[in-house]
Image 1 (cartoon, helix red, strand yellow):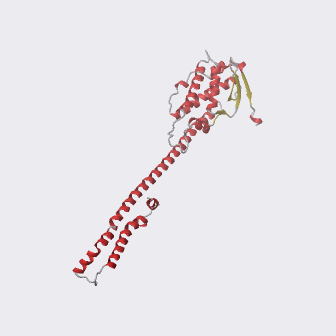
Image 2 (tube, rainbow, N blue to C red):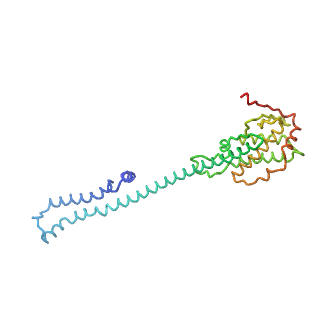
Image 3 (tube, rainbow, N blue to C red):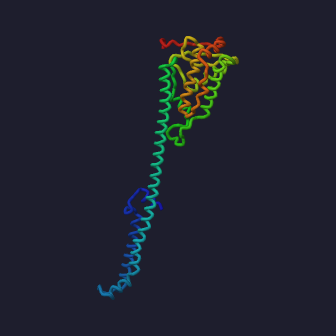
Length: 294
């Protein structure tokens, strides 16, 4: 059937297919050849158009005429096959076009999703930096890649899901940080608080245009580094970083459809948190960078 696939698979018109001409001409040629052989081997007499002569002609050439007449029903077979093949090709083409449309739609949705994410966070940061006390920087494109690792062109199964494991760790550290902020006046644990702040700053790709580097040595002698906004009071700098992280997490929650904010709206203050950190001043080492030297 390779000839059939070749003829129909190339979208040829029926009249241009070899199968059509074989079905049409083979019976006609076979009947003509057989009629010629019969005429050559028979005594037909002189030509006439009388009833007897017609009957005699039909009697001699009935079988060749019947064979030649098979061309019409035989042509119907390749015509039906051609229609079914064309229908199959049209279905296949429609399926491919639908698949391409789905991919393009997915890609468009991915671009809109990413653009919306960056717009939400960039808009939040722009407003924060205008009226806030710190100049926050956020690598939204890197954060998007970490939060939505399944996104991208060609990943047609992705439907906006975020990495629940990654975000779960963010929420866990956020809970630790805010629990300690709530205990700033009683039961404050600097180790848990600073480790949580350091983890969140790193995982959420947070940075500051004007920053200080703080190295904290825990009670277990494990040092940890973090960037904080450049403030005259080093302890206030860490407290401001914690409050900034809470606001950033609220913004991300809103984008993810997690409308739970009460746990991040405690009654603690910058002064309360910074005062709690002062008890651990001997564990802090601060490095300042003069931007004028850059």
